[in-house]
Length: 326
Image 1 (cartoon, rainbow, N blue to C red):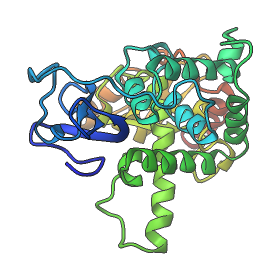
Image 2: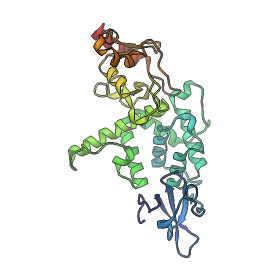
Image 3: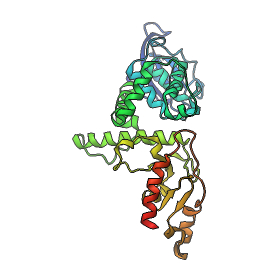
Image 4: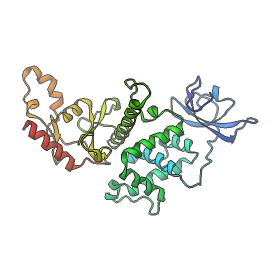
């Protein structure tokens, strides 16, 4: 193991090197993460290459994780990275037991409690939580206000910058951090760069929507993330302003996403699901294959606790569907 991102033979990932003295002579503490149980712990640089996880592999106890930045003001870059995580986890799971908070704290050199406090405090400026009366700390940091302002004014640029900063912090590629597909990307160049930027923003939206719906399809309740899609109510290509607006999204399984996109499914103002007449009157030949799709006719959407879909956006989409299919 030499650089962050390396993995030893026991599946332990090197997250970060520090300048904090270890317990061996003339060595420093490195921060490791178990690839199996996600435990994060400190290790002497001299034995990191052979370390086993103290939790699931019966390895020796880890060293204390350095918190060099504890007590220091949060930088703009740290605020942006923390805001990205705020958008990737359900609000009710912002607590000190969440392994994602532990990993970010280890990367930033801060206490887990400090990261948890920062994420929870973003809620005081979140329009959704303001409407619910959740205020966070009454006197939060100005950096939190600046981040929200940047995101509101330039969401695409902000989302891209957040992934670039996280890439630099974690020593991972931008594509890996943003969890985007790369197999079909062209070789390095202007075209690839443009496609990567587009997919980074689409990935930001996907993770924001799936976390809001707690990783469940809002029609069926399916909770297998690889089979879920963050569907735009108003199309990505037609409404730049609301591309990353979470109230312009629904978490759908792949089949209902296609029906919604093709205007064969819509949602009425009372959040009731409707299907096009051509689906509801399926012939005997297609009945069996269509029954599963349309069995949710007349049911209500499974609404998220955070970022309920905009009724205005849903009505715009429903009007288009009804004009097309009657």
